[in-house]
Length: 240
Image 1 (cartoon, rainbow, N blue to C red):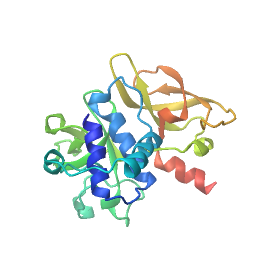
Image 2 (cartoon, rainbow, N blue to C red; image 1 turned 90 degrees about the vertical axis):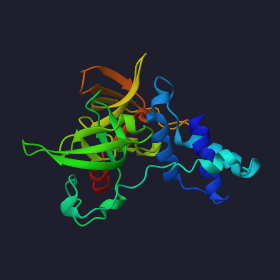
Image 3 (cartoon, rainbow, N blue to C red; image 1 turned 135 degrees about the vertical axis):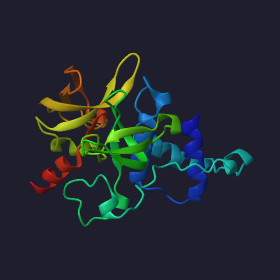
């Protein structure tokens, strides 16, 4: 229900204007990583797009007291703009770019899984010289805020691939894979160890990727829809 309410809020705010594909992909990640979807199937961005297209045409929403009261942002806010010298996490190669437009993910010290960062709340310097940042995750409340190491547990957000982009994934690549277990469903680092290239059909990419999770060495064959790639992999692929 929370996800429907968020989409209804965004639909109302769009005032009938078409929404772009990037927004649907952001919503896909927000919904799939939310705590109330643990163990449930992944929400796909094109399914979200279809919902908006149908409701924009057939079911325009009326303003209600409930919707008017709920002015929560649907999409993760950009990282708060700060001076470069004050920002505890500046990814390699990002000097000179507008840091406020970047999106980040952080690895939780609780379960080792990666979650999208909604905002950086604070930072502190440890006696070891390391820097920790206090983060709030997308889809989670203040009670789930955590301190994470800025050097090895914060990075630019991983990105999902279109079906036509599957060839950008190579053996040996670091990816983020949606691991589904009976009692949990979370995103973990993994490495691609084998790829079975297959012809695509009307459903899209049918290739199979054998991956090995970094945190428990478990191996699994997955479809492209379960994977998110690191931005540097996409840059390398585009340059080749």
